[in-house]
Image (cartoon, one colour):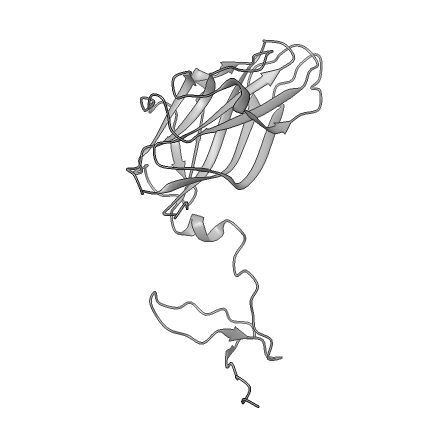
Length: 222
């Protein structure tokens, strides 16, 4: 019978080590000899810490009016991956929609999204739609492009997905009515692709803004 394999670890009680990059270190174990295999940080913190997280939204001056029909080709905001072939992919983390003027009627709202892996026409970058870092980095140096009211990237009527839906908003005023979709990387935008978002309501009234958060990561997409 072969000898058992013994795994040794560094005992950790109350102090979490802070190691220099590239160093070699034994895995941590508790003082009861159990290996510590739990996630060390909250789910999104590591990608954010690395400076890979970004968010953009429709500026209030560019707010869109809800449509009361299923969209055909129009994305109210689109996020284009401007990386070269085999470059970074954009992992879509979350999206949201927020009323900024009243629809003056009790109704539901729905946030929809669509991944276009190969765009028909790459959008022109609209710098009025600001991009900011989730880790406080100054400025944006990546290759994402954003555009509003876009109909040329290749969105298709029957490829929209429902991301979030609401309860009916108040009749007299529905300012502040909002939707949030936690997507957890469900969509990955490859180089040259687009992620489009749009909003639907019961009547074509009231204006809203939409935002999207993503991580830019080098991936093998298979």
